[in-house]
Image (cartoon, rainbow, N blue to C red; front, side):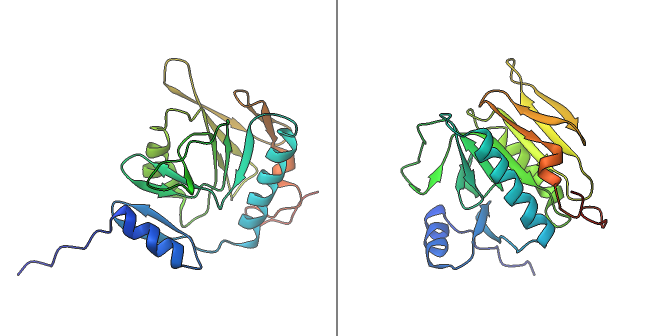
Length: 194
């Protein structure tokens, strides 16, 4: 006897559920994935990244977006990056006017429960967005930031940044200082610094 096939939701089904829900969900391959609450350190890292991007982009054309901004990914998938930077004008798909399709920068604060997916399948989908130039992974277990930058030939180059260094998001005119991101935040089970 074979198992019954799993019912896959349409994107319209997903939007209806999302509109009625108090929580947020990502949507991949016809399935909903609840955005779980993070640790205080994870939430603080997201807040620091958002604050620093906002300060770095003050008076500039590109605008930072917080984790409440849905991004429509290739194949009718949806994600909520921890932070994005968008070069105006916002491109909104007709099937989901609350989503955007043209982030220039995506930031994911890694956590033990989502790190494999963020680095794997989700990173693969992000790289398919033509507008995307920078993918930034903020480590939860060390004061370290990984920066993937799309090169002119379409390849991606990885640089890693530690204390005293800064991630240069040159295509949007912003920078993320590593010390600023981790200021006063516990990582790797150790006490906060700063």
